[in-house]
Length: 99
Image (cartoon, rainbow, N blue to C red; front, top):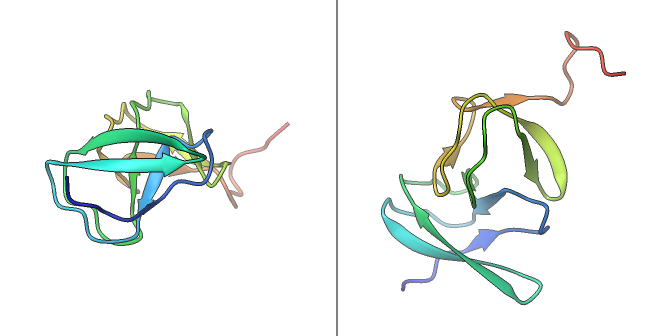
């Protein structure tokens, strides 16, 4: 298996960040705190972009670096690109009131 660099800082995270270009249909080893997750990447992931490390259900929080960065607007399969087409941001929004 070819080695692809990724960033996955927290076991709470459901996405990892590509630190190199990752082609479609390859297996990527995601490592954190001595644990390893193998993810089959479904589509090309550009440097700096996110991909799901497990199934993320519609409306579920998307977590990166241990923090919620948005919510899934549809089910996102493990290995799929996570970006504006399938996530709604929650930070800095002026149209939603948080209680």
